[in-house]
Amino acid sequence: IIEDKSTKLRETLTELAKLEVEKRPLDAKAARHTKRVLTVGLFYLLSQAAVIAKLTFYSRFGWDVMEPITYFITFGTAIMGFVFFQYHKIEYSYPALAALLTQRKARRLYQSYGFDIARYAELQALALKYEQQLLVLEPP
Image (cartoon, one colour):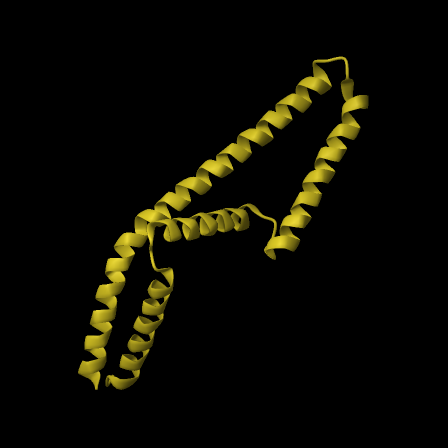
């Protein structure tokens, strides 16, 4: 029984390794995409801060005009965060957003490149099952 389980585990790990070779570049592309999107977001926020600073300190508007504008910008950002939380059911944070963007892009890449993510997950579960069975069967 032990040899049979060991053979099945080796076969499963071999097939899993082949799929991992296909999956790794797709995951890297998804991570690069997320980094680009978040970098664009950073530049948007920096540009927004620069425009507000210019209109506040270096124009005729001054703080009396810009204060309500900055209030509504902040209020709008809070509302967008709440909508994000309600829609995605995850916390409104940088790591959560990065993980969401990476997962979405990876899923699209898997589909466009024909990568079978269901088979990959099935093989992972099967390998774990065989490893646990071997731990129980093998003598200490």
